[in-house]
Length: 265
Image (tube, rainbow, N blue to C red):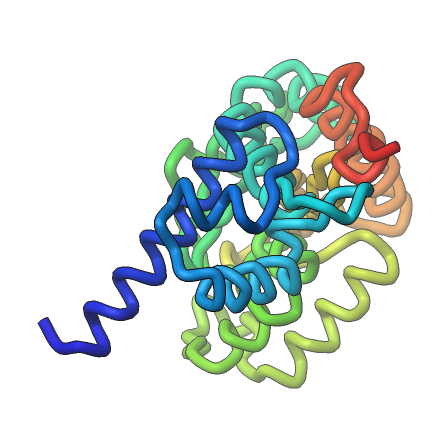
């Protein structure tokens, strides 16, 4: 292993060691305490803490004399748990969403550069869309994928645009970064994303992001509507039902618990 590779591994180990130490301690720890326990030179620890504080993963305690786990790391931990919980928590909410819209509904989660169906309820009509568990689709081609992408951090979106290759699934699939960016901007403004026959011919998807109490996107709720039944009234019905479902799911993700930002006093 090269010297630079060894240095990178050592730095990564130090970050993880620091997180584990602060988590175990359950209290603020001084610069000297951390350096002594982890056997890190104080100058190296100062640089490490500066970077982690800048990213919000570690913070200076209110007393100003020590350090503790920061909100960014707490939010990351909460979001990881919420991603695992989302499918189970959404079952009843999807049932209500399908009953209110009369259409198939689903929960989608991010999987690489695709969106995955992790829970779904089939609509009651004879003409419906079957969204199967485990189905994958490009983020740019579905309403759920667009809703997720619109609410990811700016850095994630820019990296995504740097590597995405648009491959049309239908003649209506968006095929340019400029057009997709405009749709994502609109989604952040209105709260809703759309896929007009972009992944499945004859099907219009309406989606909205699911945010946890820390306002981190953990997935998306979607409704799949045959184009023959989609009109202004249907669009409004779907949007209202999706908004209620998203709010309900956010409450389910953290029942009775304050957000990360509100826990600090």
